[in-house]
Image (cartoon, rainbow, N blue to C red; front, side, top):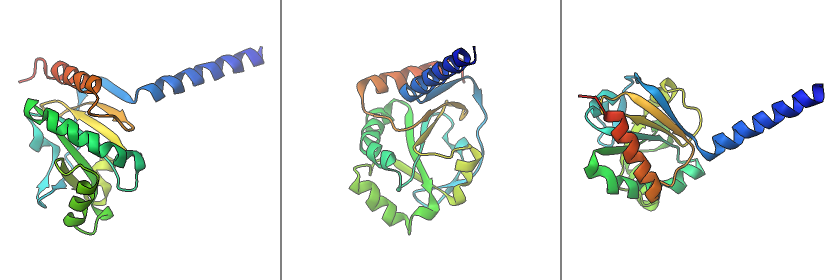
Length: 179
């Protein structure tokens, strides 16, 4: 009897791990409030997520020391360029302390073909911690009222046609009934 229970529990855990590995996407049934922690934009100005009301926002938290983060920069840049005129704002957020200065970050993004993405710096990982993020890359999706509607854990091939189409569907669904 104990063997059967153990075996059943093992199969359940295996299934959950496989299902999670296939999709790191988690959409919420209801929008959530977001932290109002300030971050710095690429011009050194303080902003918070309320500043982005009116847009569907994709925030990718990343690190220069994260291989999957770096790998997705190029296709995230392509995605951003393909969708920016269609009401989707893409932004990347990294720790301020990872960079000597803004020019170093700009050169890094250019090297990895991501020079078109708006970047933001999180001093002391305050916003990252307020979101409860502890692994990279980690994406937070906001509706046009600057409310969190879901997350994606792990890397994404952003410029894949199916991904783009799916993001448009999420955007349309999340903005229904909002003013």
